[in-house]
Image (cartoon, rainbow, N blue to C red; front, side, top):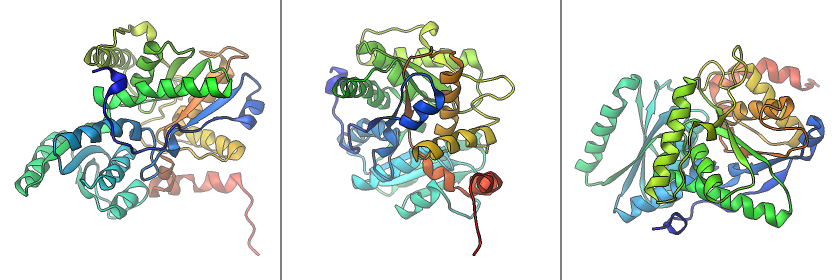
Length: 347
C-alpha cells in the first residue's frame, strides 16, 4: 500500500499552525523565521508524538488490542501523549519508565496519573526489556491483549507521521505564499527527524532538514543510525528513496558546550537562555529536554551561518513538551535565573 494511503486514527488537529516569528526575525536580523506549532495537536497537550501515534494506534485497534504499553524516561512526552491517545480510544494505558519513583508526581507524571495510567518505574535500565515482558504477561493473563510501542513511537510505521508532515508544510507554504529554505528539529529516537528527512526527499521539498541532538551521542554512529532508519522506512513502504551520510545534517554545537547539554533531561543554563529568549519575544514556551536544546541550536544556526546563509529563511519545528518546565528538578534549578529575568515587588 502507498504510504499516502495508510490507515490512521484521528488524534490531532491538523494542519498545525505555521506562523512567522515576527519579533525573532527582527531580533536576529537575518532571513525570515517561522515556527511550526506541533505543540498544538492534542491529545493531552499533544506534541510530535501525535502524528506517529495516529498510525500506531490504528494498528493496535486493527489487531484487537485492549491495552497499550510504551517505555521512556520518567518525564517522557511520548508516554504522556500515548496515555492520552489510549484513553481517548478506550484502551488501557501502561507506562514502563526508566528511573526511580521519587514519591512526587510532577510535570508529565502528574498528567499520566490524572489520566489513570498504570506506571512501572524501573531503576535499572538494563532490566527494562525483561520488565516489559513481565508486565505484558501480567496483563495478558488478565485477559488483555497488549500493543507494545517503542520509545518515541519511532519505528517505520510511526515515522510515517512525519513523512506526511512534509506534504502539510508544503501546502501551507503555497497557501501562505511563503518561502522556507531550512527546517530545524530535534533528533533523539529518529522518528521525527528521519521521517521529515525522508519526506523532504520523497516529496521534493524546497527545504532541507537539519537536526539538533537532545542527548550526547557518538557522532558517526548517530549519522549511520539515521541513514539506516530512513532507508528502512523507505524500503518498508516502497518509496524508492535511498540516502547516504551526506544527506544527514546534524548541528552538534561547540565541543565545550554542545547543544545536547551534559546529559538527557539534565538542567542546562544555556538551554534555559534559549527558552527565555523565545518566551520573551514570542510568548511561546519550550521545554528544557527537547525543544529548548533544539531552539538554542536554531538560534546559532541562523546567527553563525553554518547551514543557513544570510537572507535565507528557516522554520523551527516545535515538538511540544513544555510541561517539563513544571517538573520539580527543573523548577528548583531555574529559580535564580527566572528571578533575574523579571521584576518582582512585594507590596
